[in-house]
Image 1 (tube, rainbow, N blue to C red):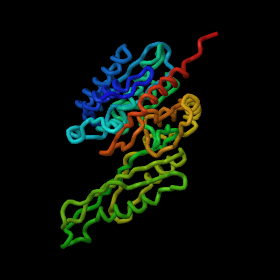
Image 2 (cartoon, rainbow, N blue to C red):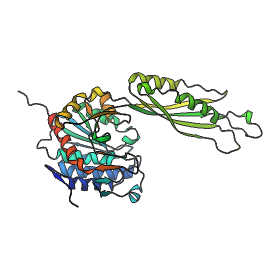
Image 3 (tube, rainbow, N blue to C red):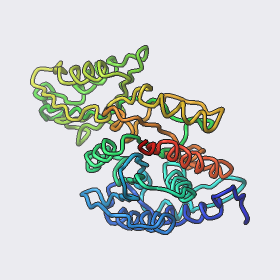
Image 4 (tube, helix red, strand yellow):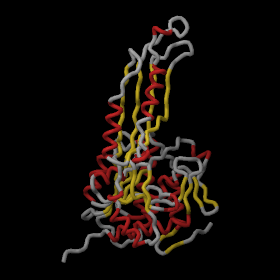
Length: 369
């Protein structure tokens, strides 16, 4: 099947490289699978750009780092882990049909990586360009954050290849996000013979869920959403333990402080119950000010682009919090991230590849006078 070919990039070649990456499944926390995925990513980069893509080992799996050499000035940032378990590909294989590509990870975010590499390949001079592809973005970037921050500070400009916002817009701001786990310790007893002798962790958890849900302030962009709960062992035993997992999104540092303080101050309602809180807001907010300069540049290069602040987090949150100019959502146009209907729009691939290349070229330092 012949696809369009824009000046300088072959959509056919991009689709074949995307197929290569998608067909090496890469679920987060599977170090063996992520090793295979990292090798595939490195091979695609090397085949299109030359040089050597280093595998940076970590507990999560290898991160991939490539540098063209020279004084660094632009970091292309992405990740190769996906949320889909091994075996997803068999059920939902890589498919090209009706102007879309489907398959696990095509939109989030393997398509963006391929577009960036092919866009960079159109440039005559790549000096100062680096690519960093992490292995654990979907699970919090615990092992990659320090490396991301180091290279962002060294380069001074970050282009994040996460999928585009709805309608193909760029992501100019992101909420800070985090996860809290609230553990309740009670005391077991026989539910029929002596229920009063126990301390019901499930009842305590119910009190806490209502209190936690009340911490949200949608008027200032703060959402606090209990998402997973567990308690109890048998139907005739007063539950001795319960856990509640909570998703939190905030738009400001003040709200980060308020929410973290509120979780630390949670107190039991039942005598004898104990509460332990773990977690926090691991990704700081990405203010729209961090992307303003780059978004204006992108708008000049590709008139009509829209920008949008979104609720989801990315590794761009870390780089923006350092004060490094950061523009996100430069990857694939499509939708269905983390879902079975995930898709990429083929007609936008060449344009997005060229946009990345143009941004990199425009950020090239001026030669000394």
